[in-house]
Length: 138
Image 1 (tube, one colour):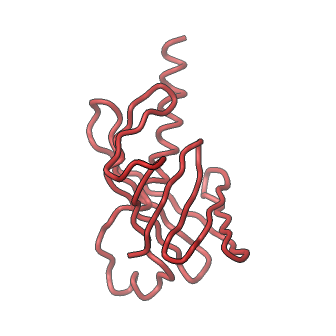
Image 2 (image 1 turned 120 degrees about the horizontal axis):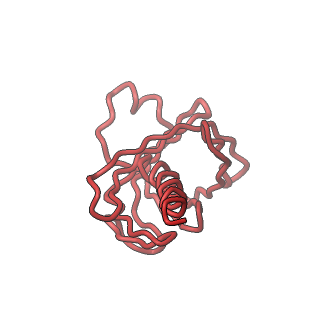
Image 3 (image 1 turned 180 degrees about the horizontal axis):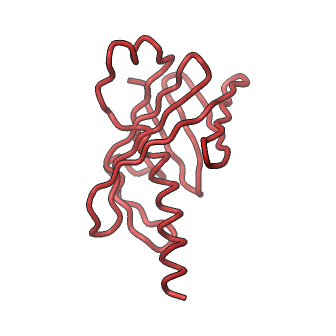
């Protein structure tokens, strides 16, 4: 029973981490900057300023940084650096396609589900797995 619970927790945190990874403040190449419609840096998770320690699903996760890029071609990318408990730092990157309806964005993640978010000026807010992620435009 304990092994099954650990697998469930690992899966949840991997999913969360994937979304958070999109927000890493890496330097973009000139080509990436040209193709990107908007680059956002993760500012907070559930109201906690990044880097942030959050408890979710019975585990403690440290969100170290994140980046979210919206491309003009309807694709987006998310990168996050995090650690779970005493485990080493991990990097998770995920890609999606998105549609926009006014300020609402709907992302369809490759190999995963769908998430919605809201663009409000230089802020992008997204809720996933019960957590609220707030990004700020670079």
